[in-house]
Image 1 (cartoon, rainbow, N blue to C red):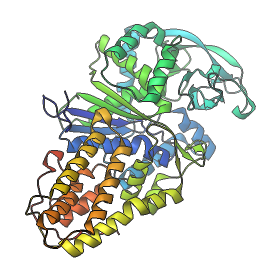
Image 2: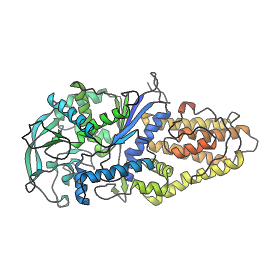
Image 3: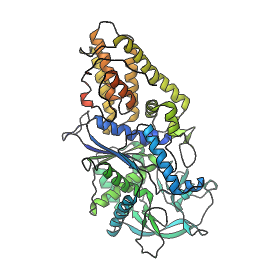
Image 4: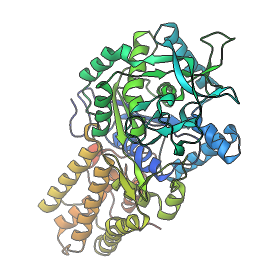
Length: 527
């Protein structure tokens, strides 16, 4: 049973946090940052201030076919593209203040771990060998799948690539896409044997898992689950006839090369990287929190759940923690989904450098598409920042620096401030609890906290110790409450009272009611 501060009867929880591994075909764009990346960082930080033991890690998704198609388009090699993207994404994460414990790329140890995981399940009879229809290029003697295949979704008719339709979130096989003029050259389909995960074979396993789960899905993922369960469950290729990816020789060395499908691979990658992230701490976890775009929803809801249950059934050393998969919808740029492969982007690093880290984190959290599509407009974002972030902070600094510099919190806050303090604490706690986690609510709580403090700061009466103490305590609480969303602001508040730095040292929500030990020295504005 979880109380409002996030603790349990057993004490602090071990919580693993991850986000969808970025495909290394470019840098992070604002769609990535406003969705799973920033949400995962705010979540990891918020669980730390709640006193939990948190591991936060992921990697690049090197084996996606989008790497190959983008490299071909740019006239470079896949390896050169991966190296450049890894460097770019690492720098963007750092610029955004995303404090991952681990962000790496697959290596030889990872490759062997993934190969052994799938080979163990294959030996255990978890997969079936089936013929599927794939587009075939006779000129190169290659079968095409995933990013190499485009067309129209057979369910919703939106433009889609093979795998999952980004519009409706449902699965489609490469050979099932409707070929149309905007899908590029049409190749004939040809049957080829692959190994599949037959989800219909495991329908009872899947439905029993969802019936037993205490976790409430976000509405868009709940729809994907309901719509998928309403019909026959698909067979998901575990391998493709391809030389790109992690090779397996389940059909013998003389057969056509097969590689593990990069989408099921992601689940095993989470196991591997989060285990690595915990190597210096307590192993295992009580709860796994995954942040993904809705286009990854099907795989998380069906393929990863099934792989986890099969791994447990067949004796692999995996845990089955309580799992929360928190989806987001799409961030739109002039009405179009942000897309690296299509060139519809506003690069995260460019925006972070122009807006500043905290300002960017605040406005992207406030407008995050966590439950519905959201439009990014730079002029609107700048106006929002001016009204709800810059102006209140400037007013707070001006008024409190002039009226209360040198004062300490040496009296009980007035009744008005005591009520406001408790209301804001509850609002932030609700946003940070995993059961109701929301970066939009957290950013809105921060905006209202700043608004109230700015309005009240100009009305402080000289000599009213209770009012002065309340205003300073209200400011002081931002050292903790704002740390997950705007860590630089939290650090400025810490400096304003001469307190210990919050950089790498998460303040604790349990201590938020305690007054600062030192006097108020003045709040510095952001450069």
